[in-house]
Amino acid sequence: MNFMTKLFTKEKKLKIDFCEKNLDRFLTENLQNDYSNFLSKKNVEYKEYNCQSRCEDCKKSPYAMVNGEFIAAGDSAQLLNKLKQLEGDKK
Image 1 (cartoon, rainbow, N blue to C red):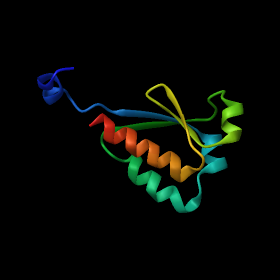
Image 2 (cartoon, rainbow, N blue to C red):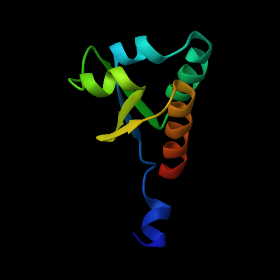
Image 3 (cartoon, one colour):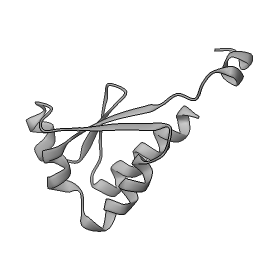
């Protein structure tokens, strides 16, 4: 993509899909506000699914599907940092 195209292209949204069961398993109460603040940004779209049929991954660590790509982390804080980094890359 050339400079002019980047300059005039609409800001791309980060589309994030979560598994409810994975959030329940790994998202700690002290991080809920941080996640809420991040997910309320105008260039972030998210959806929670009851199950994403990734049970083996779901049991191991927190994860999200970001624009169709599987993103996992060691804990919820690390996952949020990865999501923030991806959001920064989209700008």
